Amino acid sequence: MPGRRQQVLRALWVVLGGVCLLLGVIGIFLPVLPTTPFVLLAAACFARGSQRFHEWLLGHPRFGPLVSDWQRHRSIPFKAKCLALSMMWVSMGTTAWLLRGRPLVSAALLACAVGVSVWMVRLPTRPASGKL
Image (cartoon, rainbow, N blue to C red):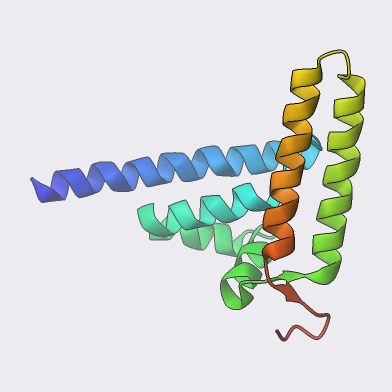
């Protein structure tokens, strides 16, 4: 039954990719939720689960260039990194301040922002020329 097991695993990758993509789309409209990591994670899941979905994502007018750029360079352009970090801190900081009556929630939001910031700062930064 190795074929059946592989089909189930591929289906799980596709479902996980769909959930990640949905979270990425929600992140477009909800500033506290980051879009880029979820779209990249969706691409990784689709690559393991369905070549058709992976190719669809690569061809998508909004998300395709982001995924292709990441797969090609494994780096983030400097401007994109600055924009992502500043928008995340504004939205997370504002939300934490608005929820200051709930210190555990505020602390959790800020801890999440610190974690994402450390991860993003450690990613390779690509200069404007496109070369690393």
